[in-house]
Amino acid sequence: MTVNRVEKCGVWTLCREIGRGAAGVVYLATAPVGRFAAVKVCLRAEQGDVRYERELRGAKLYMRIPPSEGLVRLLGFGECAWGFYTVMELADDEFGARPGATAVYRPKTLSSVIAGEKALSVKESLKLGLTLAKGLVTLQRHHLLHRDIKPGNVISVHGRFVLSDPGLLIEESEAASLVGTPGYVPPENFVGAGGDVYSLGLTLKAASFGRPVEELAMGPTLESDTSSPLFAAWWRILNKATHPDAMKRYRSAKALLKDLQSLRLQVAFSIFSWKVPFFVELAVFGLAFLILYMFFSDGSSHGGRRARRRVEQKAAAQEVLDEFTDRRVKEERANIEKARQAAQKVKADIEKAMKEIKR
Image (cartoon, rainbow, N blue to C red; front, top):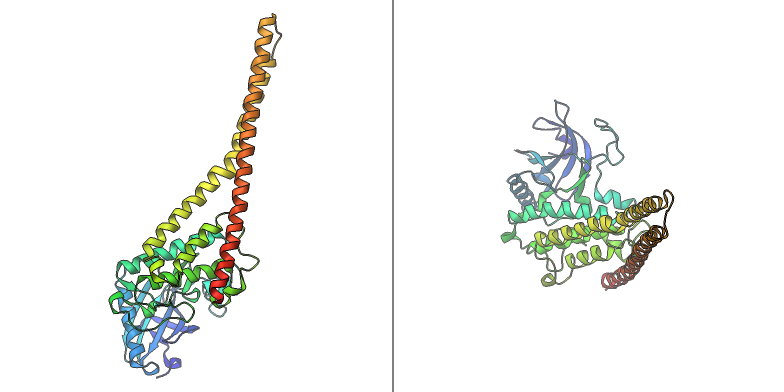
């Protein structure tokens, strides 16, 4: 039996092929109630026994995991005489086509975003990293390894990227063979949780640079957010996640997620405590000074003592405003200097990373 002869999988009618891998073909499929999904068909006749059983085992392991953030939802599973199939959430359309436009549908993946040389900003990359790390935490909580994390297996569903294609899923205690996509496999192979962290780190580097992993040595694209004051901290996290020495890498997705969450707090506080308060405080102090000035200037002054007191009060108000302005200007200059130093550190980190990649 060939792929072309498989037309239905349960209630799902296969419309057309939208993806192909070493272990199966993915189809855009419809159900009688007007639903759409992605159906992966794995034919026993077209796979060796080892590969087929490995893919089948991965699907069954994934079925045990409850719906979780960062992981694609499995909507159905079935075994047939010709093999088995899995039904998953359908990715968003790459070009925003309306639901039901099956003839023009193309799945939106992180790989397709990178192919357009669109680098994600630090904020977008951090959001992506947090989501995927949470999905990986769920897998590791169930003592499972994904073993094939890469941009092509990160799809957009309802506007959020999630990990998909759990075909190489395996219990951590059973991981021994070399599988995965070249370029994303850690030096020690997938023998523990750190291997998936390595693959995720490279995936996030590709997203930040706007280049596939094999082109990282070319440096970031023009759209990359390397000028961000927080890029240095972001890049240090990714360098630790992709360290060639497994002992110096994050041991688990939970450890990686903790650092990503800390960086998210830095992003939030940097927006709140630097950019906004300077202008807000300056406006408040300026308004307060204006009110004081108008108050002390109102009406006629009778008596030298009263006039002198008002002059002294206005001088004191002006001194407070001048002191505040000088202090804030110094703080802003210090922030600018910190940003400049951070940019230099980013440049040094990138140059170091490029040398490591070339070696």
